[in-house]
Structure formats: C-alpha cells, structure tokens
Length: 257
Length: 313
Image (cartoon, rainbow over all chains, first blue to last red; front, side, top):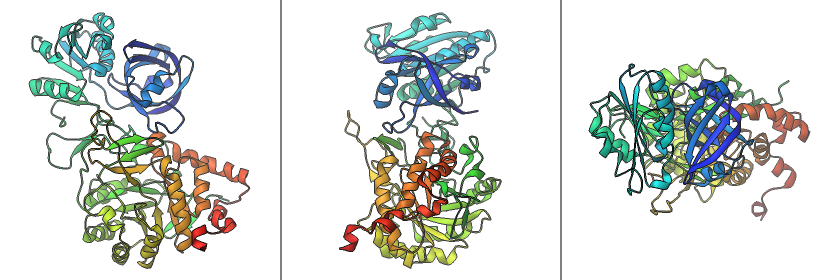
C-alpha cells in the first residue's frame, strides 16, 4: 500500500561527485515489496519545484524501519534535497511501482545485474535479495568518469563486480555492453539510461531480461498519464503502460523502449 | 446542517470540492487513498469517441509554481468509459461530471449523447479548451460563434446539464462566456490551462515533445481569479472555478471572485489527499471568517467592492 509520510532523515552524504546517499526512518518501509520500487519526494513546502521527485530505493532495513536512496544532484529539486541534513523531515509518498522479480531464479543460478550511472542504486537491494536466495550475482556497472563511480566496494561484497567508465579514467574504458558479451548468466536485470537499455534489449531479447525504465513523471501513481510508453504488441495503436505504476520494471518485449 | 452543500444545475454537491478533469484519471488511483464518496463531485478524464494514445513523451515539464503538460487527451474511448469506468465509479456516492472532447462537432455530439445517459453522470463538461491536440479542443474555444454553435448542438442531445470549459487563451473571455451562455450552457468551468513552453538549456530544444503545453498549478491562480471575477459578473449561469487551487484559503478566494464551486487539479499530483484535506479544513476557515455557509462567500469581491474599474468606464 502507498503511504504519504513525514520521514526523519537519519543521514545524508555525498558518496561521489554529485551523488548523494540519503537514509530515512519511515513506517512505509514495511510496504516495500521488491527491489526497484521508488518513492516520490516533495523536497520543499514551497511551490518551486511544484512536483515531487521520483527517487530510487537502494537498500531496505525493515528491522530498523529505515531505507536508503541514492540520487544525483542535477536540477532545482535534487539540489534542494541535497541540502537537507540529519534530523530534518521529508514528505515522502511511496513505495511506488513494481520492482524486479527476484523469484525468476533458483538457487545456484546466475543473475547478471547491469547498471548505468544513476540507474545503479536499485540493483544494490536486488543483489542483496538475490544472494539471500542463494543466487550467484555478477555486477557490471557503467559510469561516465572516475569521480562518478560509487558503491564499488558495496557491490563487491556480494559478488564479482566490473566497472566501466566512458572516458577510461577508472575500470575498463567503454560501455557495459563490452563486458556483458563475455559473461554467462541465466537472467539479466538492468537499470540505466535509455540508450543502454535499448542496446541490451536488442542484444538479449531472447534471454530472461528485466529492464527498469525512466521517464518524466507527474503524479507517480498512474493518474496523470505523463509517463506512458507503448506496448510492444501494439506499436502503432493505443495500448500503453505507465512507467510509474505498471513499471518501472518491465520484462523485455513488454514495452517499446 | 451542512455548511458546504451547494446546488447547481444537475448537481447536488455535498461540498463544492471536486477533482478537475485530467488530474484524477477515472478515480481508481485515488480510491486507494480515501473514500471517493467524500468528494463533492468528480470531473473524469476527457472522453473521445475512439481511444486515444495521446502525445509522445516527455509530456510534462515544470516551471516555478507550475507544471506544463501535453498529454494529448489520452483516454480509453467512449465505449470503454461507459462499459467499465463509469460502472466502477457507481460504487461511490458521488456525482460524475463527464468531460467531453473531440476533433469535429460530430465527435462531441456522439460522446455527449451516449455518456449523458449513464446513471451516475449528472452533468457534462464540454472541453473546448484543450491546448494539446492538433484538431478540435481549443479550436472550438477561441471563436465565440463556433463555441456557441457547438454548445447548442450538444445541448440538443444531452440528457443532463452542460457546463462549458473555457480557455484562458483568448483576448476576451467575457465574450466567450456570453456566447456559450446564449448557446444554452447551464454553467461554466474555468479556466483550462494557459499555453506555454520550456526550453532545454543545453540543446535549446523544447522540453515537451509536443513543443508547447498547458500551464497549470499555483502560477495561474491570479489569472483564473481575474477571469472568474469578470465572467461571473457578466453571466447568470454558475461558474465552477479552477486554476492552481491547493488550499481551503484558495477555495474561499475563488468564491469571493464569483465561483459557485471549485475544482482542484494539479495539486492532486503533489498531494493525493489534497481534496479531502481541503474539505476538512473549510468549516474551520468559515468559522474564522465568520460565515455560516460557504455560499455566503460567493461574489463578495464584486458585491462589496464594486465592479472592475474598466467595466465602469
């Protein structure tokens, strides 16, 4: 169930250039069903910005009623969010959307988790939950440049981790797709920029593949029809899926990316 | 005794608060947050004869205190709205105002004729002001003679009262209001969004795939108030006011300007509970302001403080 709650900030820190890790205490943590779900944050009581900001959940700690988000400071909203400190309150709506299915794999099978930039965070909780199920996990994480890299050590704790940077300043130079082609896996989960998702879907559409999409959102709950995409089976017709409430995670071939 | 109930053509409202069309879908998403029977009415998403996918994305952009949208009248089409959405809504004790849209006059007539027969549809809202579709929509809402003719023809087929939704994107909104009143409109709803745009700083490209979109939210409230203030003095039919309402205080301000009821739009996207919150807060605000019933506030600004200066001139 979706809750609207004033949540207390437990901690916030910049973990890479313009990348922030934010942990809050919230009862709505008990409503979180799957990795890949997100929350909608009202960063300020004023009308600027007016709408909420959709932010990925990166890890969940139900025992302490806390969850952690990671976001990039980019525009007005996230800049205001980055200024919030410990003890302050945040108006959060969530959890929203449908996350990654973790039951697609049996113990002993291998999951390949591929993240690009600010699409990396939801894969962290996914990795934790897959490992808990006895699934082997490999991570391939792509970033623009060294200063944007985050969570390498955290992912390494759960499995093999490959880092790529576009400019070659850290890890392997190039794109995540250069690494994936040499890896064996039973299921691929991915989240990141649309060109990356397109490239992965094109290459692995015959495999078990789940993609998390991003789109500009209004309400986050499926009412405003801002974040719709076309269904694959009806590309020129009127069928649609809403990224916020039908997604953000879709099975490959479900929607047109 | 209720202090908020309002009677308008076709509508017995428990309170004057209703979600605005396009900002509430067909109610399902919001029913997970509260009992929709609490609302005065519901203005459902615009319905066209055939299903519509709408515009490409991005469909929303933001600006200070406002939001631009170019959804493009996405909806499941008349048949599905009548067979599925309206019956689902009938579980709630709340009158429905059906927003009717189209590309040509015949579209409006067909939707109006069928949808006005639905038992829970108590009024129609004629959408002649959507700025985001290439044909129809706003084209009917900027020429007084065209709007009047359309109103007249829809009135002939509708089994329930017809409210006409006015566009602020006109030179003289009073003229438009009078034209549709003469065409037989039972009421007015105003204002629809103002046409605007945002550009990407890096590329110079419009942020919206449709290039332009409709501006809504608190940014447009003063425009809505001014237009309602003018129109409500010039016509005898009631006005349902909308444009940036997000608090009980805003509701009273719209009543002062001359509205008889109000709709809440964009604020639903920010706070899904905004309508029930406003409904709960209104009686307290009436106490503070010394009113027994909300209808006493209607038109206070011009009743107590005279007409617009240029109207007197």
